[in-house]
Length: 84
Image 1 (tube, rainbow, N blue to C red):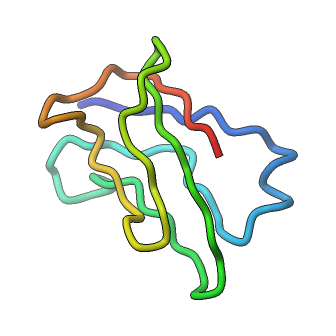
Image 2: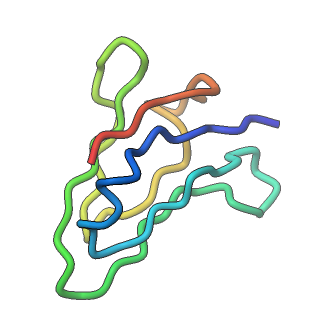
């Protein structure tokens, strides 16, 4: 089982119009397989997901608000940093 731990600053959460889950487990068991941003209709955001070397893996927006933990179909390492 792979656990992906998200590194988010606590101070940022006070400014957001949505809640961030601090983990997800993309292991295809049907439980927490996607990191999904649930936000109200009037909430606009761009969340950038990078690998440990700074390569952009995914950008989440209100219209594209979930990630399955892969990049071009390849599972990503256990720990990643998410930029909001």
